[in-house]
Length: 242
Image 1: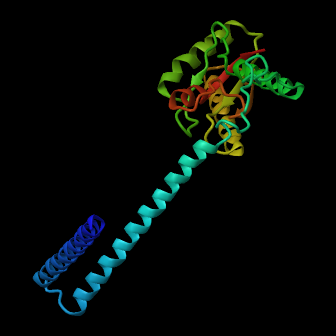
Image 2: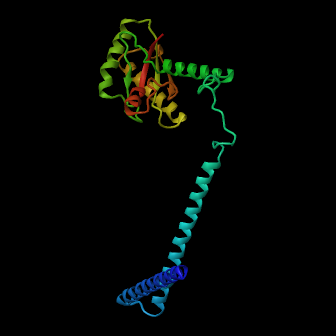
Image 3: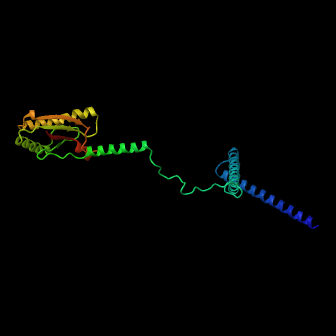
């Protein structure tokens, strides 16, 4: 008799639960229909909204089931993994046998490093400013120009005075350019700059036979930077006393 009462109580509770879920479902769809009608969605449009709701609900449920399954699998893996009791354990590598972060360089790598250091040293040596001879000064030019600037005239006049005072002296005028432009164009531009400086000196009374010119274009920069300051320093006529 006691067991029958218990079964009756459980059955009654199940019926009440089912009715509660049914009433909740009915109220939800009634609310959904009223909302759709409020937005003017009736008939077929309401059916589409209802179907979309079922699809979204199914996707959410499936996602939850997949996530729960993955979580259980992860927990099981932690319990039965290689670090668990009864399973093979991975021994830690002793500090003295661990591979150092920086291994010894191979002979090829050492040779490459030495070659790179030598290349850098040569570049730094090339970039060192050339010390001018006392009484002879370089002159500078504007971008893509070979005309003598106003601020270069005093230096050329001083150079002419030096050459007149040292009659046996011969000079070489080197034409230089910055790194922009092609090599061919800069060779021609450097030659025009050297020739412009030579003409100015000959106009001041210097024997042209004592002046020779050469153009290096952009091949021998005085400054290795890639900015306007270095470019201005490289646009020059450099005087070398022979």
